[in-house]
Length: 110
Length: 120
Image (cartoon, rainbow over all chains, first blue to last red; front, top):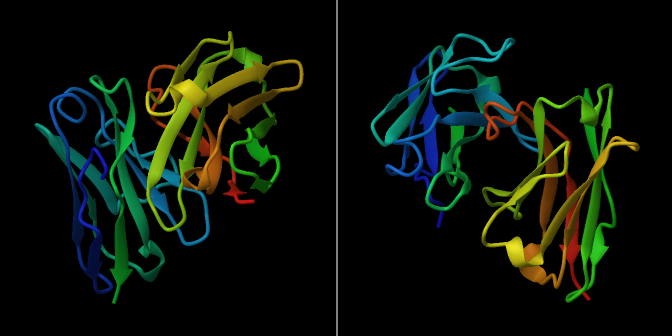
């Protein structure tokens, strides 16, 4: 049981816009930045979004993040086949005094 | 900068799991970064294990704290993980990762990961 809650799966067709949610509490998302990671099959996770909505250099602007209260979202527009991956949200949890992750969302491009 | 995990791929139950992460192309002692271990159980999500700063200060996942030691050797540009009294539940891919010291859960660089199986 993960501290942050994500839907286990999401899907879309090429060109579509999909959104992945991440729900937490005041001790994590409500009080700290949210990070998003992308994990392509068989590879290590990669930083996708930091500080709720910032993209590292090299990440396409098709990826965007947002946060409101104790929830966050990752949006992917202009969906492409290479976006098929697992996506994880993360935050610091003040109560647990540690980094917590969501359970991950498997994105399928139909 | 690259990170590379190394260590035994098979550990017997009740023994100690030991892994090392070697940093190449950069210096551990330059500061500015926290160095973490993260694991992923087979087919499951990510679990943060703990981090160490270059001066040796550490912070551990409370659920693993009693069994965990993370250390650093700046002369070798390596940091290490020791997890004692392992069980099958510790079978996972173990990643080392880097995070800037102002956002220590923003892991901007990861190793490729190494699978550790706990089995007799």
